[in-house]
Image (cartoon, rainbow, N blue to C red; front, side, top):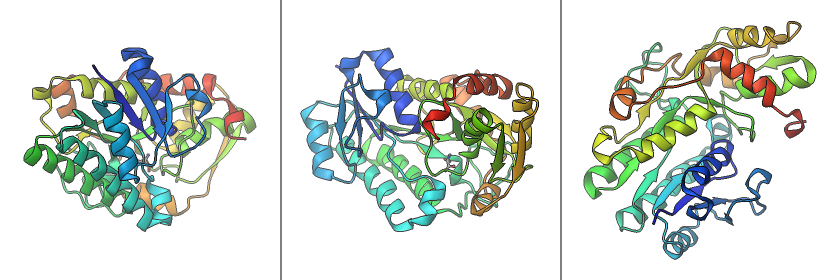
Length: 316
Ligand code: SER
């Protein structure tokens, strides 16, 4: 029987992934876990357990005790937070991965999902339509941890036969729970401020384009990748995933279609340097070919849903 464990379930991706997996496989097949003691509101009807991914014994006990088959390991520090706490970011992002890969290597987990990011790329990477295989010289701690993690995933697959699958997520846009500590978070923040104040001060420069994706697409991609037959998975580092690319200026223009008086100004901070080191757009032909990936949301469709669904009470 399938038993899925989501680690980092209280985060931006985790919350929505838990709900989607429960819908697909039934509540009895899904365990949501996070380091937070209190179960997040959105997961109040889920099977929630407190779990610290760095507690090797605790993780092993839960995986073995619950006969877990599939693990989605989402606990990590994102790019901006990681720059502020590099040592902890490295420990959390890498040791957490080892704890899961080793349990899979020893036969206690059948399938692992581990998220990578556009942060694996750097300033020397071709910026437009960044290929699956290209120069990768990440300049952030987060990017370095993701690049190293990708290689460890490929190694565990090659040497130990671990079925680990991964996506290089672009910036993810959603309304169920807030993102925390990412460079692409402006593209979520902006909707809360648009709805509450009809204006926003953006920490990314108006003309810096970044690859983004609406969460519903990202969740569907994740589950489709995990459910694809093993022989179709040709990339064991991590798959490029494209989505929508836009600048803050283009996003503001799309918001103005609904709120003509929406005002935006710009105060780029340290996150601008991070953004400038990342691609503008991503070539995801390989994912399209291997497991038939196709996105559904474009910029306007995403903006329409976000403006409708964002609840400013979550932030203010
Ligand atoms: N959205 C992430 C960040 O900005 C990138 O993976 O850190």
